[in-house]
Amino acid sequence: MFETSNLHPKLCAAFVDLKWTKPTEVQAISLEPALAGKDLLISAETGSGKTGAYLIPALHHIMSETKPNASVRLLILVPTRELALQVKKDCEALCRLSSIKSVIIRGGQEFQYQASLLRRNPEVVIATPGRLTEHLEKGTADFSDVEFLVLDECDRMLDMGFREEVLAITSKCTGKHQNLLLSATLKHKGVATVAKSLLHEPEFIKVKNEILQQSIEQQVIFSDDVKHKETLVHWLLTNETFEKAIVFTKTRVQAERLGNVLRYHKLKVNSLHGEVEQDTRNKIMAKFREGAVDVIVATDLAARGLDIDGVDLIINFDMAQSGDEHVHRVGRTGRAGRSGLAVSLVNSLDYSLMSSIERYLKLHFERRLIGSLKAKYTGPKNLKANGKPAGSKQKKSADGSKKKTAKKSLRKNLGKRKGKEMPTINQPESGGQLPIKKKKLNHAPE
Image (cartoon, rainbow, N blue to C red; front, side):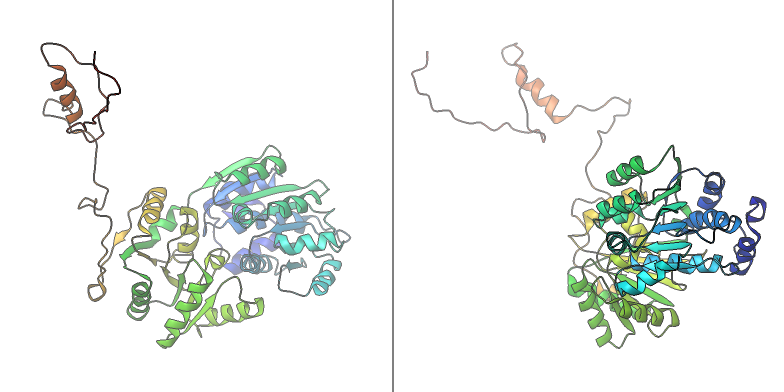
């Protein structure tokens, strides 16, 4: 429980206001080593409370030891603007009763305005790597007093090509500081490299959010092509009961096209992707929170960092490219103990990817059929009735011994000629009759 952790009274009061009665699993495991000053390498999925896992110990330290003349004390690097906004929201809620100030440094804002924010020496800076690197190059940022360095969703930052920027920024944190690296997966090669160069004798914490899987119903609907998927999305949005929905596409072009199709059908929809200006993004998200818009069509840009109350329907127009990305998409729903529905539209090009995600998550998505929109495509032809690939292990006979294969039988029969054993012949995998090739002789037989 939070009250038994001897945290700063202002933090405990904030917990009461936020109705945080007890820490999540990742918070409970990481709190003690973080408060002890250890470097942490944390693997936790979306919705697990990982933001609080690093904000709580860092803010406790800052509140407990005031340094009015210090520059930035807590530096948090995040991959996207949306995640930066979410982290700032959580930080402000926890600091409401203190004088701690936090700022966001990210693309889409006037550079000089950001420089003026940094000159005021805020205790907390939440930044995307690209824009923060510009401030370092122009000397408008000072990280010599940083006491806590957090890399949130490090795998995502590396996937977006920010490796050099991340390393350049961390090298400017020249004082003695504690490092906390968070990633959805620790198998990412780039994460291992950064962790090795940055962390000193870290404590490894891995939490799999089982609640996420239990609270979210996951379904698959087979489809034939893009137009069929668009029709299915429209049907789902007009027949399912939901408060807010997010539809994920692979490309911004498809996000815009689908948004236009749904608006044509009088649905309250906006599109969100990397080329939408920040001011427009903010307006879209404000409308989404307020209910003026109840459907967002988004690329994976929005899969991380969006924490919107009331999202209870996720539609994967295109399958995510990995199990981790699928978890981040689906994790937009089923939050805070609520239930959610995630529907993936799968055609012949998506099936293998969907199967790999099922294996990764150790789940079998429910197959759903909409009678009036039944697809011609029903999955690979070599599937058993239970939906698993045909083909298989060797069966055993009643006495438990393995049956002879066609390959072994063929070898045995070939060997029994004139009472002599023939040498082993490489047979085709399927067994059966051997192909016979006629050779042209270049000389008379002996």
